[in-house]
Amino acid sequence: MKGKKKVKTIPWDSAEYLKTEEDMALYLEAMIEESDGDPASIAVALGNIARAKGMSEIARKTGLGRESLYKALSPEGNPEFATVLKVIRALGLKLHVEAVHA
Image (cartoon, rainbow, N blue to C red; front, side):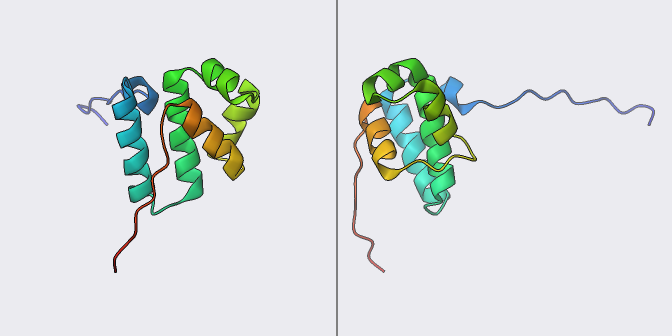
């Protein structure tokens, strides 16, 4: 096809844009809402936040291995709820529950 320019794309990495705890909290909240509570999406969002903060630091704070955190917080991962809670705490975030009024 003559005359058409190729568009160059680069991979998107949301971890690069999560600079503050507020950014991280808002990102996680948005992912929970937009994913309709999909556990895999929430785990990936936690993984992105952990990478932004430093996976080695999160591993140290949770007492879990860095490799196991990468695996658990990947699209194919299925972390235990205890792991999710440890990661949330290590990220300096707090889980919040609110009643839904139908």
